[in-house]
Length: 290
Length: 169
Image 1 (cartoon, rainbow over the protein chains, first blue to last red):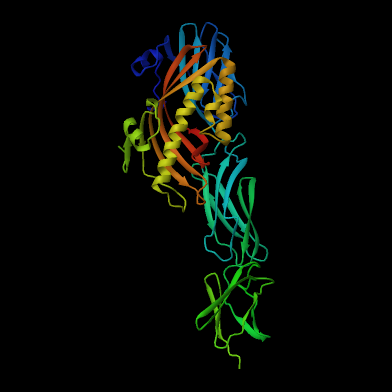
Image 2: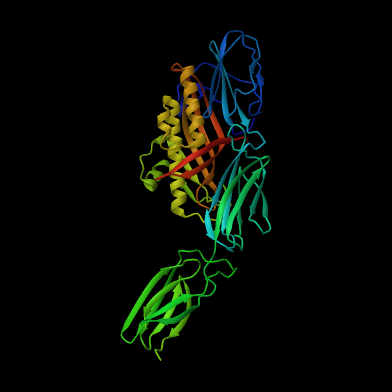
């Protein structure tokens, strides 16, 4: 018995506020029992009694016969934790404490992965955390290896193996250089959980526009926008064209369509036309009607 | 006293710190500095909120097990923890027994803050008196010293306990 586990019967507990009970003794209990496992408790009592096993996650009341060992059948205690056993028989009471240990075989993983969507080629941009449980949803606190795998078509699989501490393990992964859905898998033993991470193109690597006159207007059109890994920038990304001239300015926001942004602005001699998207600036054109 | 103990609250001090309706059965509370694995920094406000909600969870768990009222778990528990404690209360009620938990002390340390911020794990070296009543007759009282592991996840306005499990010493 560990020094910290002091058994006190009610008679000894008056000092801390709980009322007293009868005579006391200590139950002969196993220190640890594996979850779901059968075990027995010797019973030397000579009268009928009741055995109680209580803890926050279990409560059992069993009638016992005199002199017969008390058998706790397999499966009766399937929650890990610390428990108090009380054998009450007539005026005598025996108490004891024991622990139910989680199984070592993982049967469930709780997998938290973030984000669900991120730009390509981001270092440590993807995180995953796992809690490992046994078949009865007890947290397996013994060190358990967890394998994290991030895979995308056409790129090498990233793999990390992390041993749990107190049932938890975590990792960080880089997003791939090519856009598309990545499969993020956490596996402990034979059980795994999968999350899908959408990897989208990053900011445009370069932004270049061309201009031509159409009637009294200037027609502006960008080159196809790509990020620095060659992925087409997502349609719908806003591109801003700005035309400035002496004393005036026109701004046009347009969404990318098929990778290209198009707009028309008035053809004003001497105007300066610029283009930008997000934090990326493109080229500038000085317009001349000549 | 262990190295690095940052805060030592007695009950009255914790009333001031958290401003909540705390009862004396919270016992003495010691909070050690967080030793988190994980890449996410743990803000002091987050740590305080987690400890506050965890302590309230213990109070309400004690009340629920003493009164055999599973509804008292709703505010503080979710998932597996709520399910298991609800089952305990049902088993107690069926057997005609109740259990009283009078917490003497908590010694809490946050050990893991998951990188996405959706879970926090702590350990609690706890001492409590567990009293068993069968049809209102006190059968025994045992002083327990145990080490609990808890996993909490954020809900709308508080952290809820999803796992609360004593660990073998």
